Image 1 (tube, helix red, strand yellow):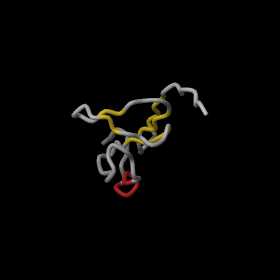
Image 2 (cartoon, one colour):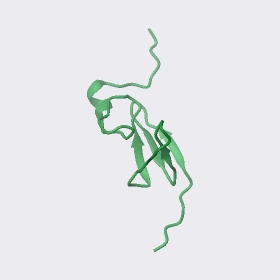
Image 3 (cartoon, one colour):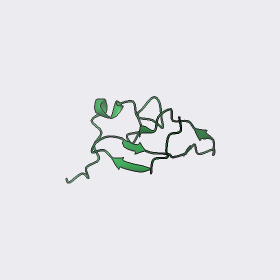
Image 4 (tube, one colour):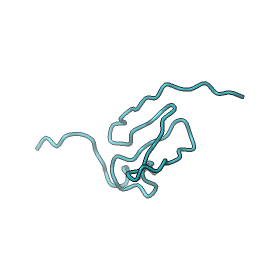
Length: 71
């Protein structure tokens, strides 16, 4: 079965990860390819995930927000 390519898109979830859809290649700082086992996955933005660069939901536990501090 031949699966057609999906146009990549990245959605910033409010107070959460970056949701990546489509055919993309993820590279580590070293240039090594990081394999995503799905065509839709979430990338960590809070820096606390134990499975970086992927999101494990830790942002919820630490109260991560993407809102600018207004004080």
